[in-house]
Length: 206
Image (cartoon, rainbow, N blue to C red; front, side, top):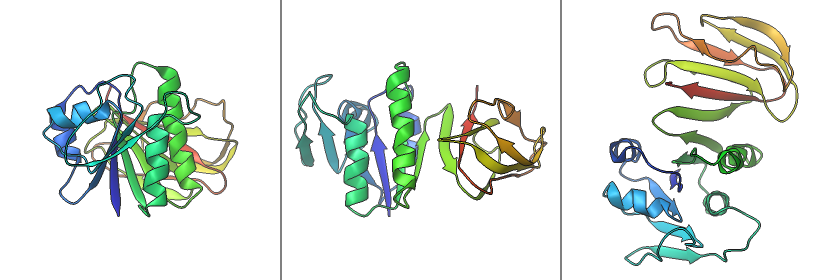
């Protein structure tokens, strides 16, 4: 089951939200994320937040009000609600903004989901971020560049096949940057794999 969480980072394009959110998706807006939904003509199923950065919403939807002083961000609380309600595919939109600390906190949501067997990605019109703990194939239909980093520890046996810069069975340290800014060869698919550990895969357009 697919759940889309619309976070509160500034939305550059309502058209992007319209394109990403499909009929039948369960939509949760995190705090001021409901304003981005409203501007895109999207009605969330659930709105969650402390509403310290926006007015309290009203309408025909479920509402969870959080205290302003809490241990979890509004977006992370949304992720917890989605996993508790049984969603196994979560996409978080508008989660990468001007605040680096908030962006990193949202990236950590991916690892929280992975530990619970839930697929999770962060996406906007410029970037897509996900975890690889096995193998994945990607193409350049939506994003032109990609980077791979060891995440939460050393990644063993990392391979990148079919890209401009290839890698074979390499043990990647968390601080290493040789996986930064790779690209596709023509329209070929790229296969990325890791034997042990996890990789943070970031696809980008600029």
